Length: 106
Image (cartoon, rainbow, N blue to C red):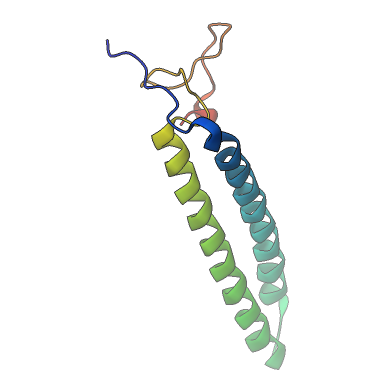
């Protein structure tokens, strides 16, 4: 079994972790805005529908950009093992020995 890769970020780790968290929160905000825009578009009629659709597509673009930013930072964090500096390649295991739920795995 290969030994775990160490965290390769050194003093840059806190900055990357903060950037990931900020990107996640931005993405969640954009998801909320997208949901609101979709709701407005789904009930709009007549001339309002065209404007509501434009707002929806703009919200969709913003959500996509936020998701891409978050994804890029997560990939960078994985590459440098920023969140699990001593985790084995197979994925993180809590110190208690309990397996991390599937939704929380890298």
